[in-house]
Structures are given as C-alpha cells and as structure tokens.
Image 1 (spheres, each protein chain N blue to C red):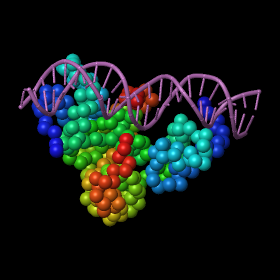
Image 2 (image 1 turned 90 degrees about the vertical axis):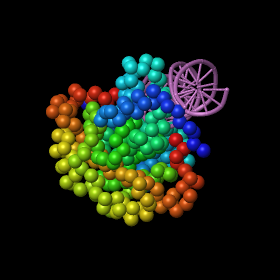
Image 3 (image 1 turned 30 degrees about the vertical axis):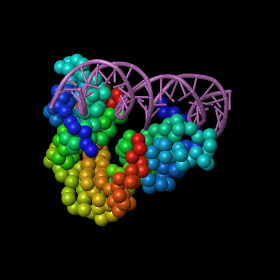
Image 4 (image 1 turned 90 degrees about the horizontal axis):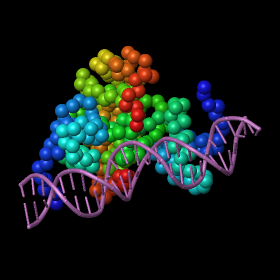
Length: 141
Length: 141
DNA sequence: TTCGTTGCAAACATTTTGCAGTTTC
DNA sequence: GAAACTGCAAAATGTTTGCAACGAA
C-alpha cells in the first residue's frame, strides 16, 4: 500500500530548482541554491525529496561525477557531455542513440533493455580554451 | 618528479584479479576474492593500487553501480549492460558507438571529446526469467 | 640502507535514518 | 486529529589517508 502524499512547499521548491536548470545539479547544489530563500531547509529534506522524485519518475540520475550524484529534471533520454576538468554536465541534444543499438543490445545479452545512457567525456569549451590546470573548479570532491 | 615503482606481490594479485574477470568488480569484491589467498591483505591496499592502475591506464572505471565503483581491466572502449535488479555489469561486444556521434558531440558542445561511455540498463537474462522481486541480490548498498 | 608498500585505524565525504516537533489535509 | 513532512544530529557507507612496520631493490 502506497503512502498518501501531502503537499509541501519545500518539495515544490526542490523540484522546481532541479527542473529549472540545465546544470544537472547535485543535492548539495540544490540545497545551496535554495538555502537563501528557505533558511530553515535541511540537506536531509533535499535528499529525501530527491528520492521521491526518482521513484515517481519526475527526475533521473545522470550518474556520479567527482563523487557527487547528479540529477536531471529532463527525463527524456538524451546524450550528455561531462567535462573532466570542471565537472560540468552538458546536454548534447543534437544526438540520439540509434534504436538499432538498443535492439542489438537486447539480443546480445538476452535481457530486457529499459534505458540507456550515452555520455561523452573530455574538456568543455571553457576548460579547453584556457590552461586546463588552472581551471579545476569542481574537481574538489 | 615521478615516484619510482617497486614490485609488489599484492599489487600483481590485485591487477590479475581485475583483469582475470568480466564481472567488472568493485574494490570490495576484489578484496573478498583475494582475502583467502592473501589473509593479510587490507582493503586500503586494494584501493591504493586501484588508484595506481587507473593513473597508469591499466584499468578504467565503469561507473558507480548501487553506490559501488566498478572497474574494468579491459580498457578498450566498449558498451555495457547494467542489470537494475542484481547489479551485474555485462559486456556488449557486438556494438560500437559510431564515430560520427563523437564528432557530432564535439561540434555540438565546442569541447574536446576524449572518451565516451554507452551503457544500457534493464533486466539481465537471469533476473528477467525469474520473479524480479525475489532476486535483488546486489541491490544491498 | 633507502624508499616504496602495507596494515591498521582514524578521518572523510556523501547519503540515509530515527525521532520529536511541525505542517498539511 | 491523523498522517505526512521536516530539522537536526547521529549513523551508515564507501573511500582516503597518516603513520609505523615491512619488504623490495
């Protein structure tokens, strides 16, 4: 039996924060972003609500970048580019994973494919054009 | 100045363990695997050596699955299938990411692409053929 | 004998969770 | 008023690190 869900302002704000950006934020980023507007927000609440959104399919995970899980309010499958230097996650909307590949994967493994993720890694425009060693901004971990 | 590297039996064993399997193991798995043969092995050593292998390009990461980083002794880029139920990571050698996609990603982002990772998710053959709810083996986390 | 390697345990960073108080319905 | 939601802090988890002992060159 599922739990009834009540409305919550903080939940709304968290979802809006994730869906209103293309930065593919981490929980910490969302928290920092909202903290000024909602001073009594706690990080645990951000994590709890992110968990709900994921179960409900409202957001999805882009994976772990530099030790931080990154989320995406755009649940339509699409390709990403991850900068190895600054940790930025960019959308690459121009590309799609060919359906034939998915079919081929199913027949090759004998399993059922329900999703796929294609991501390129390298240096983003900003990091490439500058001395890469000076721009390890989000590499912190 | 780089550090001179000395020979080490434990290091050999760890690398062999990773390269001698297609399970795409986690550090913990490697540790458990070797512990019976090398009783005085410690988990920290496994992590330390995995770090070295990565720097040297001898192994690479497949990503984080259920909170555990998984490694691959096969550094030739290839496609993976990740079972959402049991956490198994399988190779899908039949498929390759078309070179055209990489080029397209570079021109779309303006950055430099140095690697790419394509992975499908879903239910592997074993988990699909049985009641999936009874087979959440590695979902532990 | 030198210096890299290791075990051990403590430290870390991220995420989860228990509980008491608060908000929503 | 019942049940979900939240802050807080503690716990859990996976990984890293400092240090003294150990092992390879």
